[in-house]
Image 1 (cartoon, rainbow, N blue to C red):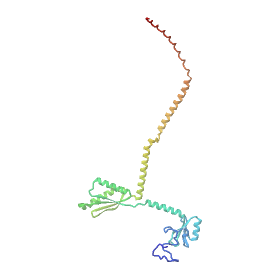
Image 2 (cartoon, rainbow, N blue to C red; image 1 turned 90 degrees about the vertical axis):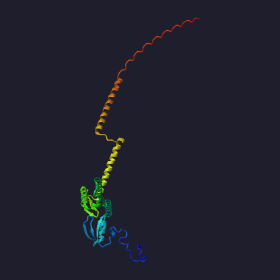
Image 3 (cartoon, rainbow, N blue to C red; image 1 turned 90 degrees about the horizontal axis):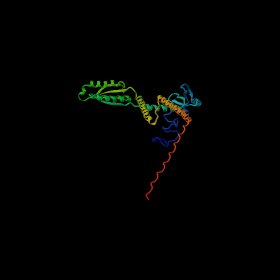
Length: 290
């Protein structure tokens, strides 16, 4: 069934729906034709290393591709005759997908940030807003600096121009002046462009974040080490511990030598026991008066 509503559904025979083609059936429209899908009598053949083989018949080109275990890919279908190249089509598609993914990841759209100043701005506000301008420029974005005139300030545009050029000179390390100060009504604008591209600025910021995370992790490990006993011992401490162990071994050896000498010494003769004292005679009892 044809997908187009205006196409007559009862038509049969050699007529084909314009959305379907026999040549591209089974292949996507954006992909080139390869191998048997190339339906031309002859092609201008290019070798795997880019060498020019010449105009050959399609049968011979397919035979060369089969012998080299490669694919015949039509790289320029609009040429006369079409240009075909011998290559590994699977590897070619993979490398193209990797390049496209890298390009999408590195792609970054530059934005235009706007910062507004007053003609009579104090020093503190000026430094604060200049810091924002520097931050935008480091991030790879353009900055449009605008000075708004009020009342009689419109009669002194040179003061606004001097203020804008002063700012441009102070941020010259990060930016270049793309549009000179231009007055439009009550506003005067200056456009500053970053020296680094958006992708480069994002890559530097990513590396800075990774370095900061690594430093924070090392600091956490250093704080955790004393509690777990994982503090590395210095060389001086190792030498001191070895010396103490050696002294302890010497003391143990001296103690072991002194113990057998103490066992070999004869024991002193026991002292004679003193003779028991004689018991006193019992006193006579007094005679009773009876």
